[in-house]
Length: 276
Length: 118
Image (cartoon, rainbow over all chains, first blue to last red; front, side, top):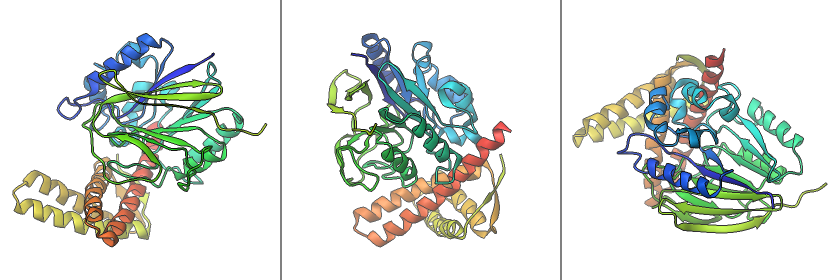
């Protein structure tokens, strides 16, 4: 069976005092890649604290997550800390246009031919409402790839039980993605792990809705629970780790692996039904 | 990078209210001897006051944008605390203000992206 493995995590690198887990999660990614040589890495934003400056990418990201064996297989989306450098210029320069987009067009999509999926990187840190260029692009991108399973990732989660709680703005992404029966939405921003049941944009549970993961467990100091959120099915606030997703044409499997290689959360689901 | 942003009446109102809370926070922090944090919150308040006092158009630079974002993070803590204490109305008001502050941040980011590439 054709499969594509993705290793997703955000909120990784920075000064060791405040980012104590970054080296360990990078090492975990290496061990996972040894087991899954074709794996791709999704960096879910806030990759280099505190302001996403060139020297912070050089001094903090490059020594761990920015080594060639990891960087060469990384696709990214920007976080709010990346935008503390105007226009997130350092972020875009570091990852390059093919793996990050550009300051003006900071979203892109990538086909995953092995698995038959379509992957979309969005930018939750700029305007994203109905008339924004980003949402118009998303509509066109989705229309051109209809009938493929869809995974989208951006930094700021729509729903969350940890720090920052919910963010209303990504509802625009959710509306478009749900209309096209997207399967997965990945985010970071909050420094914990959380998995949601598939749901509609209005938080009604729907087995054919979008399943959201928060994976802000890449190294920045972890944060605790701040509220109970509907449809939150599993959450951990005490572990650094990576979300491993295995995609194939008919389904996907998720595994949250901590830095001691323990399988903390695991499950499997079929893709959503689509019209022909 | 200084950019001229359009600021709505709702956003100016949110900045005005957020500035009040930042000043109160700065005052309390100063009283308990945490000077650095007090100065930071006073700086956020000054930036928010300036935006609140502006007309429809306001010049915002990169540091000012970060001040607005940081004030939003501080307000998230206040919101969570009020919510935990079942002081729901205050938590709801602050949540709305946080969303308006974030709107300013997103607008700045969008404009900055266009500016650095042109």
